Every structure is written in C-alpha cells, then in structure tokens.
Image 1 (spheres, rainbow, N blue to C red):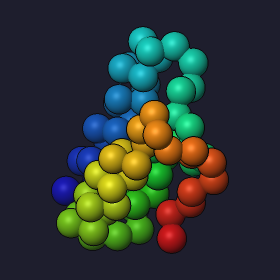
Image 2 (cartoon, rainbow, N blue to C red):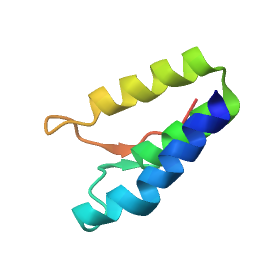
Image 3 (tube, helix red, strand yellow):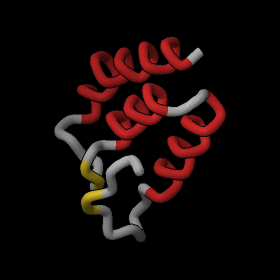
Image 4 (cartoon, one colour):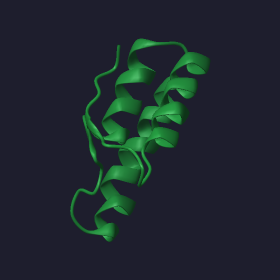
Length: 70
C-alpha cells in the first residue's frame, strides 16, 4: 500500500501541482516530499497519520519553516 501512495503523490507532484503555479508550501521539505519520506520509512497507518497531521498544520496561521520527518 505504501508504494501505491508514493506513486500517487509523485503523480500529484507531476501533473496537478504545476497547475497551481510556483511552490507555495511554507514548509521545508514540502508537504508532498514529507509524505513520500513518511511512506518510505513507516508503515501505512503511521505514515498516513503523519501526513495528515502535516497537512493540517500547513495553514495560513502557521509560521512554516524547516520541519523534517522525525
């Protein structure tokens, strides 16, 4: 399942993300890169939780900045 998620995220980065213009993620690494790293390092449930938590933190009220996968 993790390989499928990595594939889907890569497809998002290749086809959908460019339609929104330049990189607008306020975090480094980007949310999609963070998700790919999570799915490669952890099991599906933990990676999904970390990815969802990261996306929820990526909002207009957050400062952003450097936030690597732990």
